[in-house]
Image (cartoon, rainbow, N blue to C red):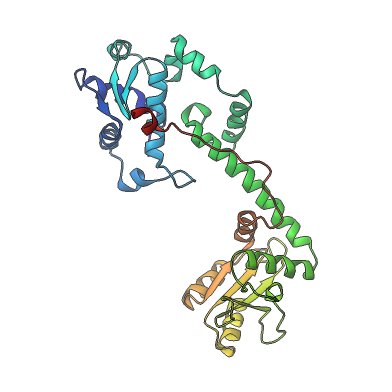
Length: 311
């Protein structure tokens, strides 16, 4: 398991101290710490939900930030650091647990922490109540923010699918049309909005073009079912049979409920021709493409442009 960012603080200082006053490069420290804690390749490559940074880099990066803000490390140039006299003294106290509480004795660190937005800290605390495995002190600000984002979106997804189960059949069809079109299906010409037209035969609920000319088509089965009324293996076999009658190569089975384990296995056994979209996945697609939801506010996360300061 990847240590939390505070658990990296003392080992980070020890690596810096071992350099005998020479600067250490952040990437080298990250590699050494990964080796020290025996992290697997999977753990080293695990990313934050954004997919833009590894969890390991993020946690060690924040350990470095807090140590620097407290004056135990000093930045020399881009991603390079040296240990300070204060950092050496911290290591000499072998009984000291170097973490946020330890760093609070330094005025510089306290001033840094006080600059944080109190509302953001409250959100982080509320978010951690849902994890049961972490406390606010164990995760980085990035992780707290992304956890909060996930919590908000998960709640919104539940509300979306709940409302979708209550709409009329016609509204449900229009909703799927809009979703598939914004995803890039159905072509771009006149009449594209009617791409999901009821065929009314052989268990096929609709057909949509995969390209503007309609050369390649996808057949669709859609079931607006209540939670717990799950799709079984028989429904999948019926849909597969309908696809064979149409000599179709691709099919999408959409439901606002879920698929039984046997239904999912049946779809796998029949090959890659049938894609299953349950209520949870449908809600996430609706969120991603702003169907039934909209952007309320956009937060831009900034970081230092190191090259700017190298001039």
